[in-house]
Image (tube, rainbow, N blue to C red; front, side, top):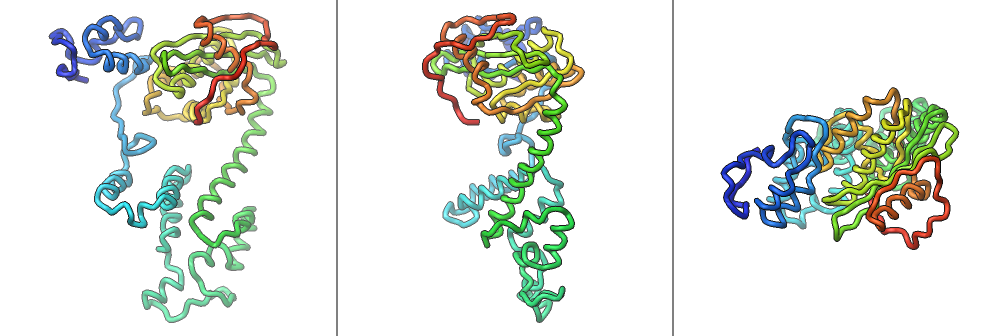
Length: 364
């Protein structure tokens, strides 16, 4: 990637590529060179960009999607927002929120398209066919007396209800709202909860004989410094090691949490864990760690190192826990940030830390 020299404080003919600013041996930014070349604000922004310890290729990122993957849908959305009157119903908050949830669902494309057609009432129900003058009657042909519209087809028809029951999904008819949009998104929320409950139970049972590491982060916006707190436990759940580490040039709480997770995997490698459960209270970070594809956000470099470290274990699981379950790791991170120094303690718990009020947490 070429550098825009007009942004530099002074001309530096030796700098042509971004790689010229990186120490390839230590995988770190050349801090002094960057501070002497760029304006102070730009230099700090450069130094806050995480660098992966693992060599990886450059990639293209599309900012029009939350996933940062290019889609035709996102281009259409950008064009729509640029050309239509904001008062148009297509841009109303509830509509945008619905489709944002829809396209982020982990479902096959053909099902997503079907849901999209249902939401716009584009399916060939008898009510729609009568409106288009394809048929003269809209009464349900399956022995019912009701008119067959989209709402009726999927939620009220006796045949459809029998189908839901045979699929062990009778719960989809429990939602009472007559608006089909919130019903469609409600279905996915309930489905995810059921899957999480079922999957979570089997995973937790499998993890009973595993070591575990809990991680958390504390972040100071003014100094751009963060601290990682980690608590390692053995198979009988006793604390074996507690560790904290400081990080400089951190741009956000999300980066701080990702760095803490990375430090947790490194601690597991150092302790020689074979099967380990890495637990944290940031849903965003845990979700990214579970993903099998390369992350394209600002956390990309950190996630590359986490994914690489996963290969050092025979078994590894990333699990989300509530913040109330993660107090010891948070206390360690907060104390390290307060004292501006890390720590490494073996077989020692910290039950009575007088740390005062906890640091405020930003939502995921």
